[in-house]
Image (cartoon, rainbow, N blue to C red; front, side):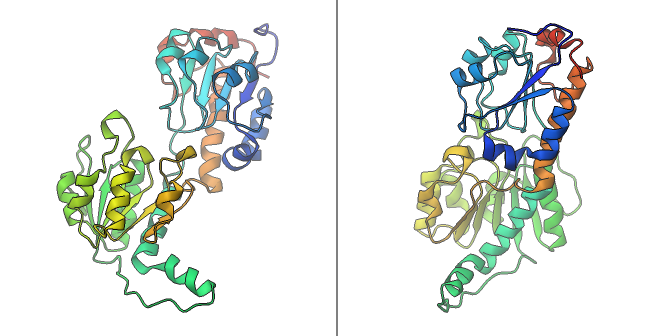
Amino acid sequence: MHRMDDRMATIFLTHDPDTLRDFYGEKALAALRELAQVRINDTGKLLATDGLVEQSAGCELIVADVNTPAAAAFFDRADTAALLRCAVDVRTIDIDAASRNGILVTNASPGFVDSVSELIFGAMIDLARHVTYAASAYHAGTLPAKRMGIELKGSTIGILGYGSIGNRVADIAMAFAMHVLVCDPHKSVSAAGVEQVSMETLLERSDFVVCLVIANAETENLMDAAAFARMPASAYFINASRGNLVDEAALREALRKGRIAGAALDVGRAPGQMPTHGIAALPNVIATPHVGGLTPPATQAQALETVEQVQTLLSGRLPHNALNAEHANRLARLAGQAR
């Protein structure tokens, strides 16, 4: 079911009401409605293949939230000419199947660099000074036992992965007068004040290990029992990337047996990339439910980028984040459908 060229394009937003409010926003939604007809996911649930096919029927474009998968079975049945991911992560999108069916796939730029970086330092200070422990006890009307903290100044931070967030974290760490170690086998790091080392050296020398590695098949369970065993017993582990990077059983064991001092986790292996309740309940863990990018500037940046991508496509051009442009032959269907 496809529209004639003299009809306005229709866009399907996969975001459920909560996700739409928190991770898309009224500003981007209003801007999108200036460009095309917009159909909202009003089912109140995450859509998989059958639901996504049904809900997006007749829509030339789909704007997909990060939690909505697009498997080969979807692309083999889809009406759409393009699927625009409102996130960087496209691991649950079968791009090969999209290409085979002539459907464009795009993703968004990392508009959450500052938001995630600042949360990392909030977690580091919390771990270093036992803020959650003291505040929770005092809030409950009890006087917590005194715990000696450590200062960030003079401490060593080890950053696994030197992408946009890793780079920003390194800059902030130097402002705190920390020693900065970086491990990224895919980059040559020459920034002043940053020492590039092997993963083994980073783990052994760091007071804080911050995991910002890209999640893929090669990095699955990168932080395993052997990795945690290399860390000093006084060190802290922080994960703000993806739960898939960590062997959770190994981390739980390291925390329970005091092989590391504690952890701060904004991601994990629970649905929605949240930390599991089992590990969040440990007394030496600070766990947040994947809120690293949950600030208005961060969420608006990616949402508004999808609006720009829609505008670009409706004007007959390719957006810069097109991932399979050479196979996107369905884009011809968009001709003449700009408002």
